[in-house]
Every structure is written in structure tokens, then in C-alpha cells.
Amino acid sequence: MSAVICRQVLAAGLFVWAVGVQAELSSTADRLYQLVDARLALMEAVASHKWQAGDPIEDPAREARVVHAGVADGLRQGFVPATSAALFEAQIAAAKSIQSYWFARWQSGERPRPADDLATIIRPELLRLGEQIMVAAAQPGITHSRELFDAQVRSEGLSERDRASLFEALASLRRFASRLEQVLETGELRVGTTGDYAPFSLKEATGVDYRGIDMDLAADLAAALGVRMRIVPTSWPTLSGDLQSGAFDIAMSGVSRTLDRAKVGYLSIAYFTDGKSPIVRCADVERFDSLEKIDQQGVRVIVNPGGTNQAYVDEHIRHADVRLHDDNRTIFDGIARGEADVMITDRIEVELRSHLNPELCPALTGTLTHQEKGYFLPKDIELKTFVDTWLQMRLQDGTVAAAFDRHMP
Image (cartoon, rainbow, N blue to C red; front, side, top):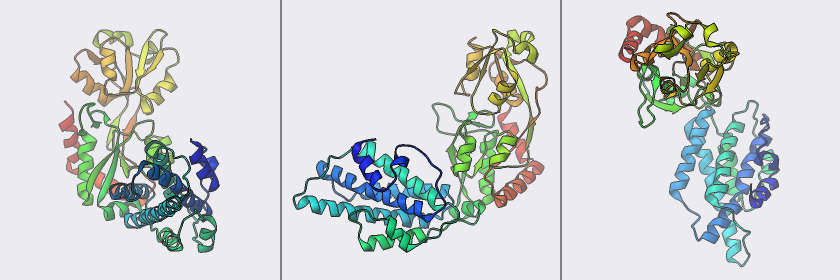
């Protein structure tokens, strides 16, 4: 981080945070107000860059993008969009006022301090602070105090009118009573999916559309809620963290029901029963028709990281050579080309991939484990109740079975 940014953040008492030490935010309004002031303290650097580049203070298109990003950050924390928008609009108004203050000083003959690059240094810090403001505002136990706000928010050039508007916007932030209420009121269901797991969710590397069993069922769930569906890309290593951060409302991607996932979110009722099974080159079926034969020195086991496939391999493979492959869409090609010997994955994926590639075959007639597929949700009982009810009805009326029929040979 540059010297100018450090000076600005240090002035607000947040240097430790700014250099990347992510301490847990306290539940007090004090920390929230510090973050607001830290963001405003960067406006001298913003103004300095604009002044020396000959750029205007006003940038309506960028301001609209900042508000849009602020609303998205607010939704991750469950804030009503109109109240998040009002907060970021108040911050923008205050920011422009502070920049105008510095412009006036430099017009009178003062020299601005050297400016950091706005695009690569200053704006990323502003975006990160904006995200942290919404996280801090969502902490339980916040009691707003104008006296405390005035003591903490002291950025030079901030007018009393803008100070009052900022406090009012912070105090007026409103959260939805539940995630279900958020989905219904915003008219949008945010569906987290990995896009790498056929037949449940697949996005080709060169494509833009997601397809699969869970994509069909996600569209049906959104229709049942009377809202639109929006895909939110995620990954197996980040799935639980993304759910906890509020990035999406439900994960639908062939997610296995596990106790680890149950610790951080809710799991819907099961809609499919499966288990782990090895897939190999057809010529090697007899060579690898048991776990004992697979777990031998010299055998190359390939696995995609972050999900239950890796969890199974980590627990059961002790002697074979384990190789990680990040892209689950191309992992099977490596086996066919002889770059690896075995992959252990869900039986349904084994059946699909062996059908699509005649060089690959299941090594077992059954499975090594028992597991169930379900949907991964935040800890919101109202949303879980709706999803469970919808899923039970779709299991009974044949909608789930029809989705499997469309995407399985």
C-alpha cells in the first residue's frame, strides 16, 4: 500500500485494518463510524488525483456503479436495497463535498500532495471499505449515537449538512426480517452454483449458459416463489464461505448433504441418493475394481479440490499418488489420455461421463459410500420451510424425475 493511502487510513485509526489484518468487527457503532470516516478520509487522495489529472469531481456513471455495488453489498447482509442506496448516495454526496473543499484550497494556491493512481490503488480501497461498512452495520447490538458519530467522523472538509445526512442514512438502514422476505421483496432468487458438475450444473468453458438438473429445478423454484432467478458463480472450495457471506440465497449444484455443511447452513430434504464410485479407462476395470487395488503406490488418483470428492480421497487414499485438478469439466479427459488412472466421484457422474466417453468405464457395479443430494441454504427457517415444501411437492408430482430424465442418458 502506498504512503498516501497509509497516511489517510492511519489518520482514521485504521492502519492495522488497511494493511490487511482482518480483525473481527466489533458489534459497536464505534467501529462502524470509524470505517465511514476512513472512507471519507481517502477523499483528499481522490481529489488530488483528479486535480492533477484535470478530471472533474462529478462522475455520474461511476457514482451509479458505486450505489449499485453498495446495494449488492447490502443484500449480502440482508439490508433493504432502498436503505443501502440511500447510505451510499449520502456517502457520495459527502465525498464530493470534501473533494470540492480540497479543490478550493488548491485553487487558492496550496499544493496538493502526490496522488496515488485512482483506478489501481485508491478505488479498490474505497470498494473494500464500502463492503466492510455494510458488514459492520449488520453486526448485532448496534445502537446509533449522534454524539459518538460526531466524535468519530471528523474527516477534513465534511460539512455539517453532509454529516447529518450520513448519520441519518446509517440510522435508517433496515434489514429484512428473513431471507425469504428478502427474496420475495426484491423479486430475485440468487442461486449459487459451481457450473462444473454435470448432470446437475454445467457451464461450458466457452459458453455463458448454465444447464443441468439443478438449473431446471432452480428455475422452477424461482417460478414457485414468483421471482426471477439470478445465477451466482461459486466453487467447491468457497461454497460454504460464500453462503455464510450472503453471496447467494441457495446453493443448487449437486450438493451433498454433509455434517460439515450442516454446521454453517441448513440443508434441504434429500432429492437424490448416490455414493462415491471410481471411474477408470475401460481397459483398467479389473485392475481397479476395489478400493484396495486403487490405493496402491504408483496409482495416480485425480481429484477436484474443495468438495466431497476430495474429502473422500483425503480420508481413504493413503498410498496412491493423489493429483489435484482444478477444472472438474476437463478432469475426465485426463484419465482418457492416460494422465491419471482413477477418479472417485459420485456414481451419477460416473454413469454420465462413461456414457459420453466410450474410453471410460465404472470400475465398480455399486458405490463405496452412501450420500444424499440436497440444497444448501442460509440459516433462515422460513426459506428452508418453503424450499422443503416445494421440493417435496416436486418429488411427488414428477418434476424432479423429469429433470433427471432430461439430463441423464
